[in-house]
Length: 215
Length: 215
DNA sequence: AGCGAGGCGGACAGCGGCGTGCGTTAGCGT
DNA sequence: ACGCTAACGCACGCCGCTGTCCGCCTCGCT
Image (tube, rainbow over the protein chains, first blue to last red):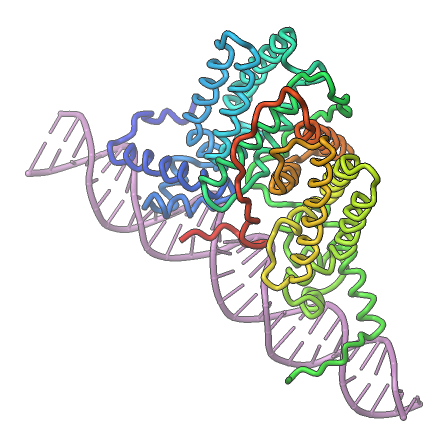
């Protein structure tokens, strides 16, 4: 009611907004989401106030910054769904997802974290998960995916993949690629596999950039 | 030369030392190593100065706090080495290691982190790795471990395991157990496995409790 | 060209962690 | 029992991050 603001930014403001997002993407990719807001502002060549004016909370910044990553994520999933062979589609999704995460450290955190206000994230996450579930169902039917696979295993693998850190980006990608291959090797249906232990219902951790606050 | 200090602590000092270590272990296990020193002091019911007097750096504190975990680590490795079947020994090591890490979030960080001054850690780490390497060699000879397995894959899996986070300790352990099983499933020699992508030479990240400091 | 609103950045107060100096307390040896 | 000295903890100064206020600037419309 009270705030009927312009909704159209002035040219310089729009320019700054872009620079902020660019800086945020760059620094989030390398250092994760635990970067101070001021650091983003510094990199963007902008005063803190300007950053806070455009993005009052870090969540908003993160959400906007990773919008295109989310598109990429969706694209990957759709590509997997469209593949004629469900198992190949499944492999493709896992591999590409791991690669996305390997390239961008912050993206993992953003995806895994639950933002109270970022409904968009949850929605896309749900979409991706449903798609993978469908893919898994088909791959199981085709007898290529082990029968005791569950959707949570994808979460498990993606979380695990996010634990892999390397010094250089190339090493990171190489490691992540190998890990993805190992994961797929584990998921593959095979005559001589022993049954898996029970599934853990994994919920994403609390929130982003909240330092450990134990009473 | 200058500091020829007593080396024997007074009873109260020794008591405080134990309480500090206990508190550190507890909080590190739950929240990882990124806990403020003061928080450890608070939990131990001790003033910051006292903590700093006993453990001038966080590294010293961590090293001492995880001493017994390191023993457990060694015990696991030795147990694996002693197993008659090398593959079972290998499985046991991976499973127990993952479980150790699942129980104690800080331990992973401590093991993965490279402390400049903690020679002890490196030595034990090296010992464990050598043992696993030996175990892997034997398991390969027995035809149970896939031939393209390399030692770095263990690091990869342990790092990955550290990426798994859950809200409750039980969930954490369950998830980690399943993950270990998946990893072993991937490592298992099998007729229809596709070859793995190249290995990444994983070096542990820089240091402990250094916030991202990019120029 | 002039004007007004929206945008900008410097500056500020608050908070929390770090590491330490110093006066006080209490263990331990005689 | 006494005193010496190690050990304790309060409190301090410093630093970095957060979020906001306010005076100046500049874009963009007329």
